[in-house]
Length: 453
Image 1 (tube, rainbow, N blue to C red):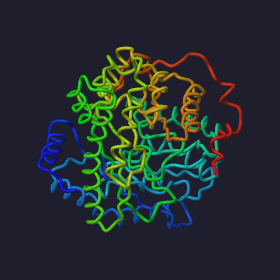
Image 2 (cartoon, helix red, strand yellow; image 1 turned 90 degrees about the vertical axis):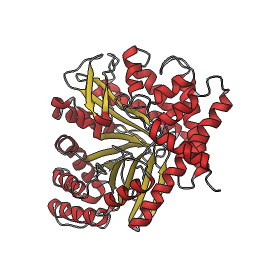
Image 3 (cartoon, helix red, strand yellow; image 1 turned 180 degrees about the vertical axis):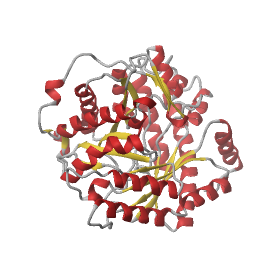
Image 4 (tube, rainbow, N blue to C red; image 1 turned 120 degrees about the vertical axis):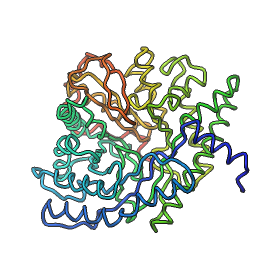
């Protein structure tokens, strides 16, 4: 179908006035062939492979961005989960591998590199434990490296031992970066049902089912959707849905065009387009403002779950019609610090931690960039993670937790990171304890719905 002049003009308006961008071009690189008799040798081999594979990535991204005059916010890398690659003993320090990842990312000029992680939804190997124990030091001392650990799945249940362990590592990571509002926690995600082709950070990694390498694209456009809905103040629900589908279709077409051209330039297979609406701290580029355009006084008001369910479903339907290569998370992000509207809703008192967690049941991503008091007990953090994992496990959906215990801060005080990470008030957390529950050993069993064969 040819693109009409009207479509071209509409896309130009989206870019110049409504914050439309390609949120990231992410190259995935398999490290399954890496060999070495020691951690330093493995680290050296990882560095060499990444630099060889990605040496022309930034140049290709800049050329295509300039050719089409479309901003590309980030260029990123993902690699095979390092716990699989390292084959380490439990007491080994994997910081040298983290350092190699960071230096390789600097050499090829990417913003972030994801994959310093592990898959422990059923149990842990010695290498998994070595990786998890290395997370706080790596994230607190390195700039580009991001980490994710999958602790639950619909098929396996929730590994509660790993949940408690990750709560401890989140708190330790926060303490090691306390002088920077505990910002290192912004690079750590705990997952249920983690996708293998996610181009977004901090949870991105290149799964073992992926090929040697791939180019994945993440689109965005909350500002574009908000502007469209504001032009329809009296629309029916069906009309709102159709407009969101129409806008998402156009955004996805742009994303796939950019991704395939970069793929062709590099001679690397095109992977997926992630349809997720990802906000920024910029005014007007907010998921919360989309909900207000639908008719809510503020995000968190009654009706918020229904509104975000409508939004997420319409985004998926519009994107799936536009591309046969949809993957990653493909949902609606509701981060607090990274979305000025969400932060405003917390400050106004309309959005609590409980309400936010309820919204994650239909937004298809999870608790994201949520600051909590720095003195929150480890066991309470584990309980929050376990609740989120249960939402993902029971509903057979991907959810994540990116939570920031802001050391030295109490509920109502603000943390501020700057840039795309933004700022937000610290959310209050229930004072009722769950210590005995989260310290029980083993797994919460998979639900009946997991037996689908």
